[in-house]
Image 1 (tube, one colour):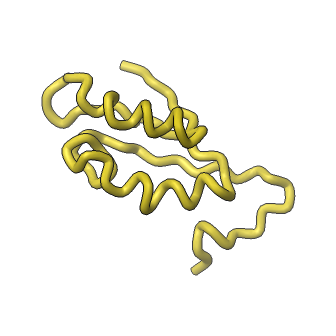
Image 2 (image 1 turned 45 degrees about the vertical axis):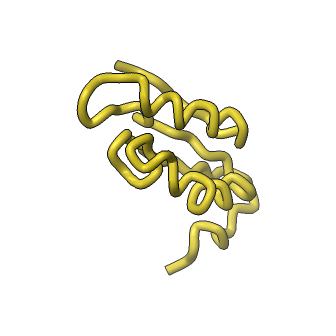
Length: 83
């Protein structure tokens, strides 16, 4: 199995996506612990999109956005928000 960081993408068509909920390793509950370790290296080779990245499990608060959005902005990570 190829590592995500070693895929052959001569046409630059690959984009990585992550779902970063408040209660997973990259979310607010863990203070975004894995963002720099796991997501940042991927941003060096591929565009990254946080999809469904603002879910709070539970409740419905803005805590996750306060961790995820500044990090995404600082690392040129795209995100989509819906309710």
